[in-house]
Image (cartoon, one colour):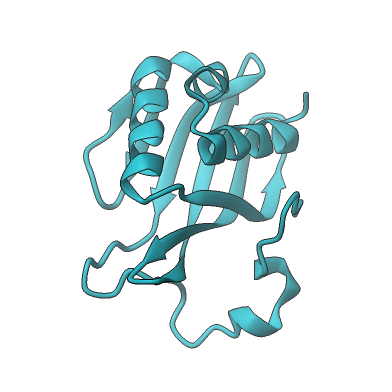
Length: 141
């Protein structure tokens, strides 16, 4: 599996709430760094974290919007769709990946969480007019 497919498999596992699928995407000593919370460490901890996030957000769904990478590293833009106050909101961000032995070794996540304004993304970016940012079933970057 190439790294693009690995990232898609990880996001698909998050969307399904698949603990084993998420865990299998990561090195045992992997770390996820984030702008909104403390680091999440280890494949088991990361898997449990994302299953909990999916449950907290009421069946959140993750999508890879763009992917640029090689055998060692990648950068992506993503959308997480979450139900909130009767509508579906798009939470958007970007991540930088490091890979090792066919798994994810590290993720550095950049996004903003604001409980007053759940829907986030780049200010004034025309998401609606850009087909890269229209999540659909089975979407691939």
